[in-house]
Image (tube, rainbow, N blue to C red; front, side, top):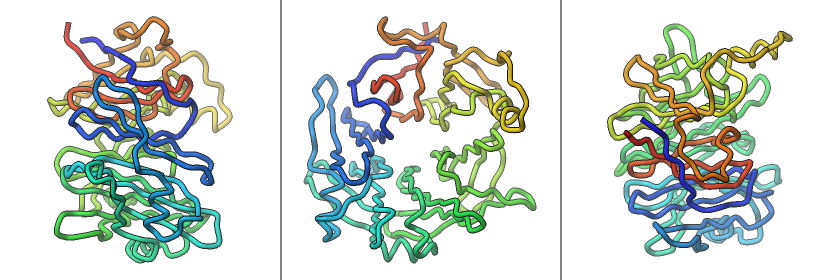
Length: 332
């Protein structure tokens, strides 16, 4: 097997970028700004050129009835119905504005599913919602909204589910692992879609992957402690195998040693960057020697932060170069 990397389109570098392919050849993305500028969602079709859509933070604010306010689209994902689901927040202002909503590429309309009051109520965070980071994740027909914050001594999280015919409701606010609890409160950690109706939590403090059920039960899937701490949350291929991208950097163990005052020398771990492929309990690494990429792309410095599944491949944004890339595992 080998890893084939191709360019999709160049974007401004070093921005928090959210990519949402619809599965029919169309890709949407938005880049977070400084919360006062315009954040426009762009789209590109197979073989086409990028174009601006009618979806932006401004269109969300107009729908909320606050056209003169500001804020960020913190997360975005394509739903099974072809709409884009988003989470929006205006923080650090006297008046809190938050919204979970949709944008229809077909009609160009932005709609609000849950406004500030509804999100404060369902998450039970109240005014602390202003300090929370939000991420939307799609699992089948269900859209999950993960809210979390790390106020010292009062850190909290909530997993809300949006299901057809049911609406938005809080599902999980604690995850039990035996007699202990997992705290999904850090903005640096990740929640991703699992197979079936469960979620995966990447705990960057311990270097472990956890399965989280709809009932809030947790179980460990894999120990990643020898892999780079900046590894992406997992995605899945067509055979149901977990796939992750591991950039160059300290492993979880080395990073912890540095934090504790130890000296981390040259790593004897896997050669990275690499695609990490899990087949049951077996782990296969496709390192940079197996990468096929444009000659001008320095694969050693790739720092992709998220793998987004798009049909038979993945999309990934590389912050240092600003390149939106397509990544495909091929058999030779």
